[in-house]
Image (cartoon, rainbow, N blue to C red):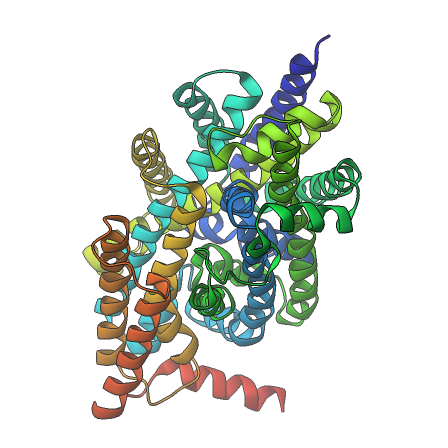
Length: 496
């Protein structure tokens, strides 16, 4: 049996396994609540590994490995900042989101924001922001999935993408969030094992850390610095990453929506430590970018035709087929875990936030009808993002970064500041989210077209604009009462 066949069999076994989980989970889906939140009955390990796996994503495993190959150590600051961001998100948002969700029956972030600001407009704007960012981020996942499977299967990108999306469709549409949580749990274990194998094996291959750094420095001294002195990731990019990945982690709906699902609030502290630790371990896979740079420089490997192919080609070239198969499964796990999360939040934005709560004015649908509608909309989102991903506009790394920027600018001020600051007003929330959405998308388009290329990341600029607007407009508009603060106050009184 040749190496490619072994890799293929391991990959197929993994994909069939998660399909079985999805189909098995289908019988537990009773209504929209179980489809989107899993019934809020999961323990800290399941929730924690779901948070870390969806934070990593195909953007992390494929896109950032490619960016490390191009730019070196400065890209690792994203991992350091994102690890810190997990702690910040749990510290600031986990408890209030879980308590408010239980009181108001919230299933989505716009659910909580409508309760906080008593505004359908805030719900609509934030739902659109989530939908727009989710589609962009999902394109990054699909591109990573296509790149991965074309290497494993030896077929064209479009065919590989179709196969991957078909499998994803079966287990996400059928199983919903119950399937997502369990597959995230399994996938994160695979991701941790795969990252450790690659890190240790690759380090032995290049001759250790000192040798690695020496050779990388000889290629480009800027690649071993925390940020470039002359390259594309300079001090302003470094500052931007702080805003996007430390502060901005709180605005990532595919991650913070997991806070709804934990069984008890007291479990959140353990989930926080587990999530941050496992994410940091999986980020070791990014060293593949440096290993590949060294092996290409030595002439022991051909230069990858695209940075997005760095991880799959390195693994295929230098690992035993059985080990390579496990690592490929780990990378597919990263892609699949985030794909399912984004598909579900995009679907919930349409079904729950726009159709049911705005168009139907909160009318309760029959359980079977709302579950069927949720599945059909999820399927529609899959088809749309698949078509857009057949010819995606950017590298996986930069595409994912742009989507993070949309979420940061549109959601962080109204959510993280708004849940603590009683002075924040409905008008401020409407303007802040609107400006965040418009500027994050508009500035990114200008940057891609080369019309305006700012020193700071476009998402970071949009975030600063939306934050200033949120605070400023709150201070000049009339304060309104909110049931959310009454609920938090009552909880504090009860626990005293």
